Image (cartoon, rainbow, N blue to C red):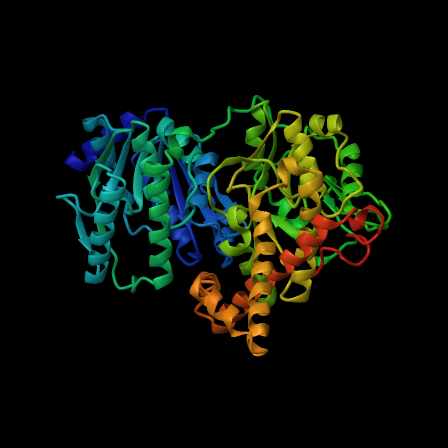
Length: 611
């Protein structure tokens, strides 16, 4: 028996009946996925290690899902295969999290599906884990016994990144990015529960969280042959990696977020979720939404669709269509609440569609009785038309969304909020019954009042960046500004009538900006008439400086490598500020909100199907 054979025996004995789960993310590997998965399965079968393979297709769209789903492993005694299919690409972090949550093993190995690192090296990972009493073992390109062949520019990038990570995170290891890692389940689970990064810095965040919670990390040697397939890193990738890494450092060292973030208690049962969708009529976007609902990883749900008139039913018995007539969205949703059978109501607009794990990631919070509602970001779909995507960039711009930037981007931290839109909102059914559902005398703004009622009943509203929906945007300029103007008017009106969750300084900033522009215009007009002293005085006191700073910020924050995207986004930001300021002051001065007596709402031509 060779030394390697002895190490495999040691691995088999260490795993015992506890099982090893091997989570393998695949992305656009239809040509190699089947062979790679079978190679791994045959390896662990031949060594007699009780193994559960969890291949995860990360929304490849190239047929990888079909390959993984069609493979047969009949006759294998020690190996089982449990494929996980993500309908849309969410990044490596999202794929690994989905795979882990589908796994059951006592030990969990994360292994890249391209097999750049051969799983034959598994015994060395178990050896290091036992010898060092470690909770985690990571493959390291810098281990003294590693044999690595990769391009010189990759070596330079790797060295620079290692220096940055060592300085920022202080991890006691020399490599975080190698695609093979072994975890004890009791360490990996709590770390994943606290994670926020889905893409490039996933490994760094995962290890940083585990180390901060006292996990011991060791390193194992690896053999890697990259060959010629790894070219230069794209500038966008490098930039995103740097941002994610700095964000991990900020949350770890400054916010201390990972030590205090909310990790909800395990549910004692799986509650039924009633998904309520208000809409004027059936559309391609509604069909897109229902298709994504049916692809949810959480299976205990029903959907209630509320169109104006009668619509043809759906083949899925869990989807019900209920005719409401031409009424406001709040009235439609109240109908949905009355008809719902679930313990939790999930509100989503018909011009949005959910991520595959939308229900799963939201429902887990409802084991905490003080949590009344959960919301998540509404991200601009990648398939939207150009002007709609630019409209999404305007909303996503920090100068426009300010402190509410988290609503439009799948990022940020979990936190308590007191106001959240109904395009992505989960609420307890018994709480909705208690407060009487939505108020029906306002649109838009009815969700702001619903959230006020939730908080007034001493219940918390949680924002989680993993509870994602993709929300189609209005295109620039008129549809975007028309929607924004309605929001601004009602926010101005609510500031004086319902100040508890609407009276915020940030809402007044666009109006103050408009006043400033008016002053600039007056000074310019007086200068043209020969009254030059005002211009000189204005200049002396730095009156023009804020304008130039503003233009510089708009230019920098809207940057895009596509010139027309850059220009149109910048114009959209300026137009949004001006129009929001005008409509906000109108609402602030109004005696009544128009929708209290005008039937101009979702069902009368201002519907969601403007893309």
